[in-house]
Image (cartoon, rainbow, N blue to C red):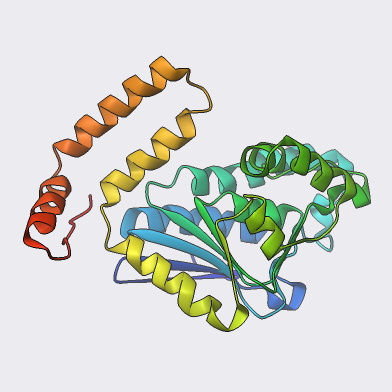
Length: 259
């Protein structure tokens, strides 16, 4: 697919997907959602880690492009979420490689929840998150009612949804909504260093970490312990595990093959 609303680069196992509509604060339209889904799948097949970020200095993603008239009509909202947002979000959530949202500015509405779909969210301290939906008579969508209670707790999630107030990156970090907030001057170098660390890590183990963490919400203790044992058994048979132990014994950095 030729991309017109995003860019995708892959280098040394690191894929960087950039939302590239800075003139509209990287707002999501039909074309962008399709391109994101395609690029995420391409990265999952070719890279070892994926970073999603936004072009420009103002925004990571301002949410649904309200100028995209084909999706503003209330008749189309349910269809748009099912046919366009769900494939995009599932592609990120189901990616076999670690995913990072590098939130460089405002993340509002569906843009905030697109960021939260990644495994790890790293934000610049100038970034803000906003569940803006109730301001136009809607509920949080694009996974918002799923991510928010799990990542920041029910009380904070309900307040964020009802009041639709800006949440600073520092607040988001303190509340457990994101992994970390980084000073703006250090942000780009920091998220790249984080991504490069994962890119040389044990990719197969990362995939199983993602699986175990996600399934815990549906399992009781016995089921989760059995899942841990099975996944750990698989990791224990891997060449990465043998290399990790050998590197530890030899007091050197491991050289993981990944998948």
